[in-house]
Amino acid sequence: MTTLKRRLISIIGSVAVFAGTLAAQPVVVAGTGDTNTDVPAVQAAVDHGGRLVLMGHFSFDRPPTTPAGKPYARMVTVSKTVVISGSLDQNGDMPTIEGGEWPFLVDAVDARVTIQGLHFVRPKAGAIWIYAVSGLTIAGCRIESIEPTAQFAIDAGQVGPVSTAIFAGADPHPPNPTDLGRPENFSGTLAILNNDIDVGVGAAPGAQTLGIAMFNVGRSPDKEVEIQVSGNNIRNSTEPAINFRVIGGRAYAERNMLVTGVTGGGDAIRVVGSGSYLIAHNSIDCGWVNGAATAINLIGNGNGYAPMASAIIVDNDVTMSAQEGTVFGASSAGIGIRGFAQGNSVLNNRIRGRARAALAVNAQNAGIPGNNSFVSNVLDGFQSSLADIFVDAGVTNTAVIGRQARIEDHGTGTVVVPMR
Image (tube, rainbow, N blue to C red; front, side, top):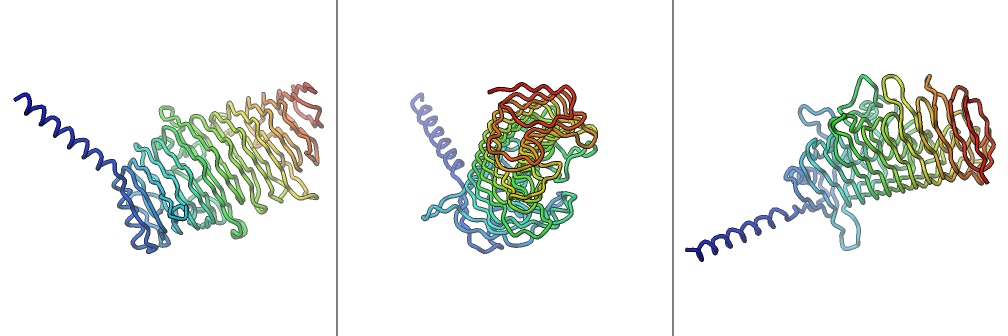
């Protein structure tokens, strides 16, 4: 009897292991190039959850759908825990997803999602919209030639067509105190790593093309997030390549390589509102020719928001590559601090090229920056039209520590400590 029981237990255990192995096997979907086959096939596989492998060429070039009760159109909805991976072909090429308005929209509030190794070509509005998730990885993808759309402009409350390669947020409108944008939709670690994004050239005049944007993510007190945007190569944007707005938790932008387009202009990296931020070891070539560009801009919000806190900008390599003869406006700087921004540190950055100033602290929208510091930044080879370092009227308690530089100081309590 004892021997029989042992045999039964052994058989049951073997069956359980075999069943677990079967369950762990990925679902493989091969692209056909027929949009009426490819989109339903990927949706069905994603709905299954687990592990999904895509291979070949997929066409998503058909009108999107808006599921009942959902606010935004998309091609495929990701609503379960899933790992979506691309399988290289015999030539070493990633599977291609061509066309489609938002090929993937992630609406998985209690699930973890991974999307890796996919090549998106000419998506409309963007490639991946993260609407809700509990842990996310987007890694090793290639996104190119994104088509800005009027619909996403309407969704975002903007004029002119808009695109964003990867967007995280329940509402693409810039955050405001009366519309929190469902920050409770997000929790865990959100990692966007080692992606190659060519936003595309030749967009219609007035188009706003962004790289990676996150609005009102993790603001809920019990669902703070950790955001990691690292190792990405982003080119040809007309607006921020990386855009953080009102983050509940910690956000890191590290070791990214950013090269803006020529037309457009604004901030290559924009950080707005509350959160704890580290902007470090990035290489930025800011080549917009409108004379109003800033490579890295920290903006503290008022009007009910907590001011920006604990932002550290360290060891970035910034080139302001506007053409000689460009007329620079008041917002032009290599690194800027504006509005209600308080207690930020800018240290050990290298700034080259041309702008109104290499480093600037400016009042904005009744917001007065205070208690910010510039430490050991290297400005060799920088040509300013106004001053190397500019401190605006009303700005308080700015500390400048470093090599001798041309400073225009209209602030109060500015402390300058020269170093050799």
